[in-house]
Image 1 (cartoon, rainbow, N blue to C red):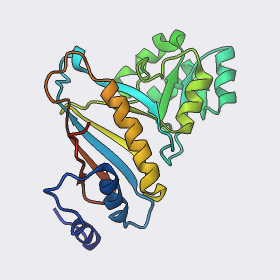
Image 2: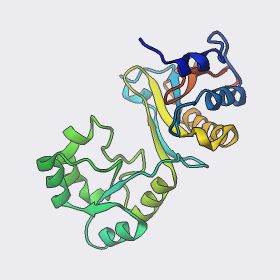
Image 3: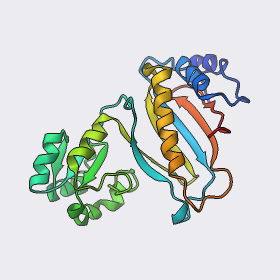
Length: 229
């Protein structure tokens, strides 16, 4: 794979054989984010669980203390008074069957998060095949199926993120922008790690946090020491 000069220069800062303490790892990630745009910092956590088993799923949502640095477009499926509530809370789009048809017929996906009131899930369920693979299907665990649409929309706008396992038992999550600086990114990191640790399934045996790596959009990965976690 071709690697640019900036990537190679950044890689020289990092010893791939070392697991760094969180603050040191974050400093290296910020220093190695040298692209012309404000790079997103991501965390990749390998867990000692088997996502094929329902009782070993790890999924949830958390509002990061310093937000994500990204403005997310929110679509709310609701009706009657809840529709007005969603719009007042700052939802970018709010509606019912007409939005389901827009997604189905026009392949419209100009949104980042979908929220639905419980009474709308029968309608939203028709979109399972298109929303599911994109990770957009509303879920009670993520707080996106809720009668309290005001709180849901405001939390998402404030920097709420969802974490969930992929098929290889890894959680991939953005925790902010490189421009936040190490201190704020470490606060976001700690908040997310606490949530993931608290979400440990009772059925999980052995070492829970197998490995943890931090990286910016264009930068190399930095391993984080997980022994204390």
